[in-house]
Amino acid sequence: MPRLLVQKFGGTSVRDIERVNAVADRVAASVVGGDRVVVVVSAMAGETDRLEGLGFEVVARPPPREMDVLLSAGEQVSVALLSMALMERGCRARSRLALQIGIRTDGNHTKARIEHIDVEGLNADLAGGVTPVVAGFQGTAPNGDITTFGRGGSDTTAVAIAAALEADECQIYTDVEGVYTADPRIVENARRLDAVTFEEMLELASLGAKVLHSRSVEFVGKYGVPLRVMSSFDEGPGTLITTEETTMEQPLVSGLAYARDEAKLTVLGVPDVPGVASKILGPIGAASIEVDMIVQNTGADGSTDLTFTVRRADYERARETLAGIQKVLGARGIEGDDRIAKVSAVGVGMKSHAGVATRMFDALAAENINIQMISTSEIKISVVVAERYLELAVRAIHDAFGLGDAIAVEDAG
Ligand code: ADP
Ligand code: ASP
Ligand code: MG
Image (tube, rainbow, N blue to C red; front, side):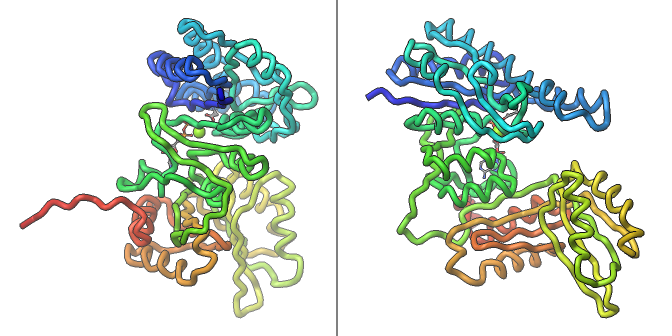
């Protein structure tokens, strides 16, 4: 039986013409082998950053609608190049932009959600022996405007298309060999996982592991899309994201994630009366600033300090918002730090075990790393530390849970 595959290639996988040709070879091999393939491509490496930079050069706070038109341009280039390379190999390929397919989203610029994908055009391509090469990361709002899904969003295009077409597998080709116990660029002996549960992958992705866009993982849970992360540079089985409950004993911690782009703000010395948190966080929410962790400390004098974290990009706006309400709140002051980072340990095995948090805190204490904030759920523990300790913290926790491959130690004897 020929399979229907969605194959997505990220930025580094199409970073130059040599790589575009290598991707075309791989896709052509699948097609020649008898599979029907829908290809999804990101912009060439660094291109989306470059475009974003241009926007910020023109204006400090670029209008989101125009940013979407600007940022989505990178994918238009790579789909055209890859389609040409496929045609050179005898494949009947056609580049397809979101507007042409009908990738319908809400109107939430720069972080739009996919609401519907029209499958008629894609099915007509496939039925006619055409390989559609789809621009990732972009969609169309109800009013016809271009939208984008947030950085890293091409994964979501791929998984959403795989769900809509009920594909046999969605393959995310990237620059590492799968999902690892931690970012292999930070932890040298990080281990590739053969499989990871959808629940854990969703946590890892939302807590910062950028190997998959977290929205794409949501589709796996909702529609049961078989999803595999693999290398576009090497052969290998990659990592399968599973929706099955395993009966095997699960490790306490399956993997670590980190997020560098965090900031925290503290409102000092507000009278400790009902409604304070909502008076502080209400205006923050109204400014469309997402709040992550929240900690409140009440002092002996009956006043309270409230600390919360936001994305670093929202830090200045959050400070301005707080400065605007400081008087009304009767706050003694406002403090902030935009050089913090969050490290998280994730594992479904935590559900049934105590002591996981302690092991993580001990590992940080042994390295003299101060924990600024803590948050836990059934399957994760997150801590906030100073950004300068981030890499050390990740490695220390990775070691403490024995997550890595054994490193060969040379015999000193
Ligand atoms: P692409 O351009 O292919 O979408 P990304 O840069 O978005 O690639 O994602 C791949 C990167 O994710 C890897 O190069 C790696 O540094 C990073 N990464 C972070 N956490 C992990 C992890 N747990 N496993 C694998 N890669 C990870
Ligand atoms: N090109 C977009 C970005 O750099 C989308 C993606 O790569 O997934 O964020
Ligand atoms: Mg990516």
